[in-house]
Length: 332
Ligand SMILES: Nc1ncnc2c1ncn2[C@@H]1O[C@H](COP(=O)(O)OP(=O)(O)OP(=O)(O)O)[C@@H](O)[C@H]1O
Ligand SMILES: O=P(O)(O)OC[C@H]1O[C@H](OP(=O)(O)OP(=O)(O)O)[C@H](O)[C@@H]1O
Ligand SMILES: [Mg+2]
Image (tube, rainbow, N blue to C red; front, top):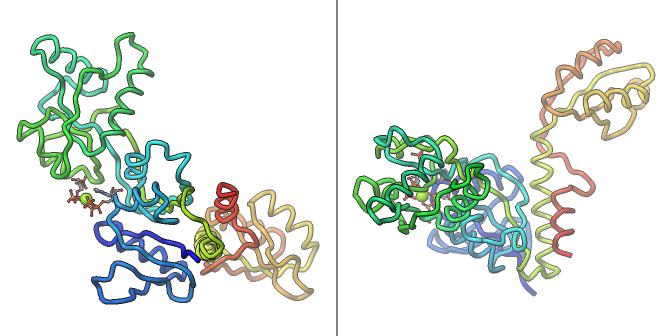
């Protein structure tokens, strides 16, 4: 019997958000031992082992199949797993951990603002000084891919950045140009404060990836019966919470031709009547996308509704949530 391994960040900027995200879905982590125990469980969901790891280790464990399910940054997934499409399934973007992976050069390079300009600089260095442009980064694979892609898609015959070499950097990458160990960098940024403090600027077309935290599943893990049941429970709760966040419940007392009205409101506002037409004298219950709520209220008023209430919901359980179905389809 093999449990579902759920890998979550043990530290860093994603950790708190991840705990809160699972908490909202009614999935509460319990640590089995003391705070130094890096394994845990989820209260009331059997057959789950929670593994507390660093954000970059999570990408590796999902790739290898050591973990079934995890949360980490898309930047780390794309960097660590070259054939990501074949090995992992990105299930849900989580709306936190936003950051861009960017190409940044010294602000002092005033006439360099695009990748094409950068290529000119690189070419110049090679011709005049016989050396290659040095790029400090920990995103080695993403950088190689982006620089080659730029080359392929550039309309100029000699476009792209070809004459460069990567200087691997594990920390304080932004300091590399000032320290003289590289000419430019590729790194992750959110506010841009660190780049700015180091006298660097992002190239206009230098955004390589817009990243955020993702819920990901491993396609290569051992998907035992227990693991499948556990993931179904977890994803069903997550889907119910996510669905609830996007809709509002609208209730209104309507006395005429409710069936036709339901069809019409469905077409106009994507509103649904999860419990069908009400008994006479009872209010109609609709679920509608948050953004359509006030238009829907207007339409209900126009149709003669008396009082109308709008409420938020905690969870909306659907018979077979797409999140669950999609994962099971790709596991086969
Ligand atoms: N401003 C940011 N800088 C860096 N990472 C960010 C930022 N905002 C969100 N992230 C996301 O958080 C992930 C993990 O970053 P974090 O700094 O929390 O990990 P870490 O604890 O530093 O890990 P490691 O020790 O392996 O570097 C990043 O890969 C990225 O997806
Ligand atoms: O654009 P900003 O908002 O300034 O954020 C970007 C900085 O934050 C991250 O470092 P972090 O604080 O995670 O430290 P680390 O290098 O130890 O991971 C990242 O590596 C950048 O250095
Ligand atoms: Mg960090």
